Amino acid sequence: MQINIRFFALLREQLGCEHIEFDYQGERTIAALRHTLAAHGDAWLALINGNTLAAINHTLCQDHAIISEGDEVAFFPPVTGG
Amino acid sequence: MILIQTEDFDVGEEYRALQQASPGCGAIVTFSGIVRDMAGQQRVDALVIEHYPGMTEKSLQSLCEQAHQRWTLGNIRIVHRIGQLAADAQIVFVGVSSQHRAEAFAACEFLMDNLKTTAPLWKKQLSGDTQHWLEAKSSDDIAASRWHKQAK
Image (cartoon, rainbow over all chains, first blue to last red; front, side):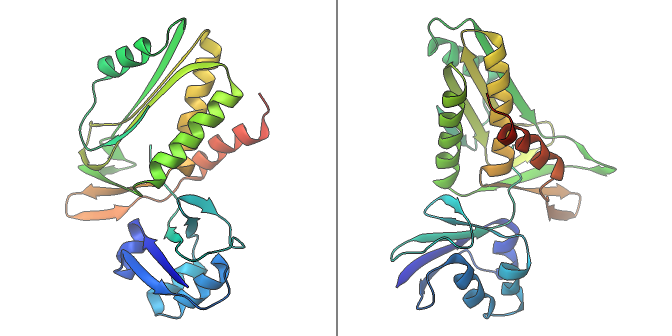
């Protein structure tokens, strides 16, 4: 399935990547997607080792959340606005 | 009304817009957040604020809906700036109107506490030749968590 993945702030800089269009064939959970991405290289281990948050279609979600075709998934550090 | 913008805002104009949108309200509480010029012992030249377009608006809209469910409010107005903001610049404005002050005070604090822990905004601090992303503070999590425990 085709999904869009976006990265923000410190994580975006560490990965050197802002956005990928990803043909994902794994188990349809955020947890499984984190592990698939973490295999891309050392910097990507932040997706399973750190405190990176996840959102699906602009809503924060937990690791057991289900991803569907066409979703926009985002990963980012804990927020610091205000 | 939720505004995410690079431009500065005028508290007087925001206040008047809120007042005009709040017939019958006897109380308006406003909060303004400013870029501090020091962080601990370190001088701060500026902050760069990044956000997740679309999700920021959605999460703030959700907070406004939660505030309206918890308290009887007139209107809510939130302005959050993004981009590079020098020390002493305004970052955020939250204004809440209601019939009586207690609800406006509580809702304004609820909105700020939860904005800081749920809206997808991030600050990078620029100090001289160095720059670093700020980390989330546990004190902010504690401030937000009291609203989850406490019923109305």
